[in-house]
Amino acid sequence: MTDGSAWRGNWRVRLYERVRERGFASLTAFAEARPAIPLHALAEELGEDDVAGVQVLSGLLAEAERRHQVTRLVRDVLVRLLSQSIPDGWPAVPDDQSRFEIAKALAMWTSFTPETHKERVRQARAALRTAPPPPGWRPLGPDDELLLTLLPDEEV
Image 1 (cartoon, one colour):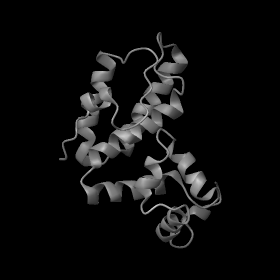
Image 2 (cartoon, rainbow, N blue to C red):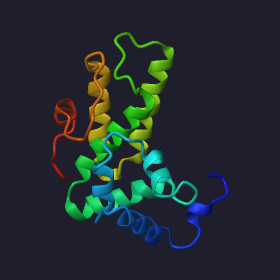
Image 3 (cartoon, helix red, strand yellow):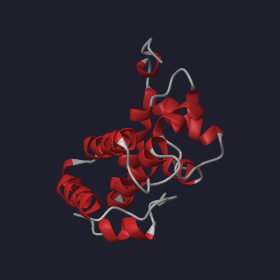
Image 4 (cartoon, rainbow, N blue to C red):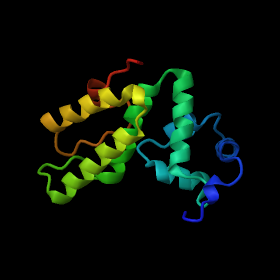
């Protein structure tokens, strides 16, 4: 999507119309029905030419803030980024490519995280570097046991 069509008109209205057309009451419900699917893929499903991943993220964050579930969304975003970057799970012995993919996912995770949660995400990233997950670890949702240990449900 390079022509900017996602930003034409009222994209928020368009986003929620697409969600309702698919039978969901909220963007969160739509996303939860598609665990571990990258944000850009959710956007493509809602409108290949006129919905962007960052719009989906913005909508999910707004809903999470209203529901006081921002920490859960932050974990969910990491799940989606890891499924995109290391689809086969955490490597047993990271090579240069997998280290790059992991670093990219973690950097994007931090950049997508609201300021209120950035310090907690930095701590979680440090914990992942200090004690990497077991080989093959691939969280399938925000309630993954390891993710709950790294980033427990405490709204700040």
